[in-house]
Amino acid sequence: MNTGPPVILAEDGAQGLVRKPEGGDMVDDTWSSALHRLWQAASRAEEVAALADDVYAPLLATPGVHHVVGTRWDEKHVLRYMRALSAGSDTPVIVATTRSMPGAAVREPGGAPVVTRSAVDGMDGSVWPEAEFLRQAPGASVVACTFRLDQRGWAALALAVDGTADLATVESRLTQAVDVIVACHTGILQRGREARRASDDALLAEASLQMDSSLDVEDTLRRVARIAVPAVADGALVHLLRSEGPEFVAATHVAVQQQRALEEAGRDDPWLAALLARRGEDEDTVFLSGAALDGSPFAEAYRGAGAGPAGAVGDGPHPTVVSISTLRARGRVVGSITFVYQRPEARLPDSAFLRSLATRAALAIDNALLYELRRTAVLSLQEHLLPSQLPVTDQWDLSASYEVGDPMLDVGGDFYDAVPRPDGSIALLIGDVCGRGAEAAALTGLARHTLRTLLEEGTDPGTALSRLNRALRQERASRFLTAVVATLTPQPDGTALLSTCSAGHPPPLVLRGDGTVSEVLSGGLLLGVLDDVSYDSHEERLTAGDTLVLFTDGLTESREAGGAFFESVLPGRLAALRGSGAAHIAESLARQAKVFRDSGQDDIALLVARWIGVQPDADLLPHDLQLEQAALR
Image 1 (cartoon, one colour):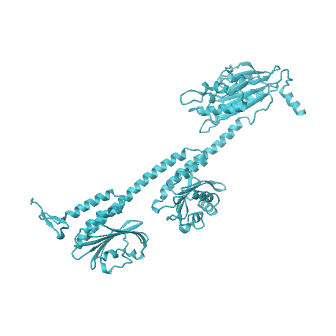
Image 2 (cartoon, rainbow, N blue to C red):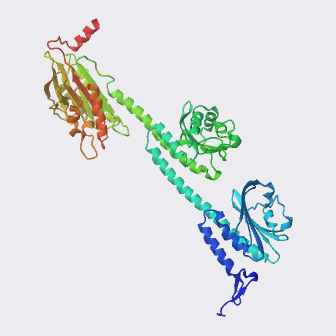
């Protein structure tokens, strides 16, 4: 084996160096280095045009090459770009155009790159726009390579060479350069797709978080529209499917003026309403453009238009495209989302992305719809478990407040009532069944109606609670409950006798006219735990202006972030309401507890009675006689 140094030969014009190891083939170091640099540049390039200098210069350095011209074409044989560089010049001629050249169709490549040779003098300018530059080398030959970049276009590189050129070498270098260009373009597309997928995934994740954060139907629909614009489209319309047809809910657009047009179209346009109705069960996203939009509000508002910097119509270059996606969740259609685009085709989302976005939106909307239905049902049931109204009397100012605390909206077990009694007194009752849901609701109904019936008949509170306890034990109730019953009986001296009987319930509070707050003494075992239980009463007097406040533990157990319970501040908050009416006290305490609490999801029930009083020595008739007298007036 010969280990001596290689022989270095200089080509004509010193344009390149070759090495010829003994017994080996010619290797062009200059071209190899240039090709290596070209591959390095291709790996970093963000667009193919950035490779021009690294492609043109080494090709022009090839012996016999005088001109290099590159062209870029779209799928409709429209010339988009041309770049020409001559040997000995550092300044390329760049032409950006939209010249339609149907004759160039004969040059469009199929799969692999195509290399051709032709005489420059015989080139047809309607097929070869490069001819105007290549003819600057009269009598030269043209070596050209056409190659496909993607489905939307192709490109060509043409070299003008003289008779000294080694055509095999020229063709080899040309095809190697084309290989790099195609690989660069493929890499750019791949990186673009990966970036687009990452961006789409991030957008879908953010969309899910935003949409799932609301259980209000209309708010969810508005979020769907806002999330999509401008990240996905220039405008968005969302419709909810009702029994009578599509119902417009939300619209948004990057331009305020066009948003108003979108809103009007969403509400009233017959073309859009008919299209959405025809879509029906179709799950595929449909794209509409051109003649398919004739007669639509988009053809009128967006004809030849784009969203300019001020949102003006009529100054944009991109045609309008509209896509419609059906929103389907859990086997049923809940609505549709319409996107309006005025952007390059390359920036339109694909069907897979729109399907994924539509699926997420549909689930969020369906969850909100189900929540709304459940909320309506629960509130309706809750209303039937509470009195529709409280008694009206000139002696007592009565009011109540009920706040649902569970975000899942299971029906709660809190209840209250006010019952006029035959002796002219009034009985106030409040209770709380352990737990939530249908079983708790059934027990709530049993407890309230049992106590109400017994108290209306004149049964004393202790006996009423004992009989309710017995009923619960006989029914084998699996839940316990707490309750308190307070009777308020007007006295001849203008006061009221307060008699309180409790079964494990939080003690009521009394707000005196002078602003002091005291706790009503009470005790007693929970209801539904033991068979035979008796309950004792505690008595005290109320004077005119005193207020009795009954509540469930949802009020006192509301807990702030620091760990303190509302129970610790309740007396002070109640004292601050001195002189207020019953309605204001009930609503204010419930609202304050909700604002106060950082944790705790129990319902809050309040029943407030303010003793207005009667004139001393007034004729206090039993309740049934009062009603009889009132009927005779």
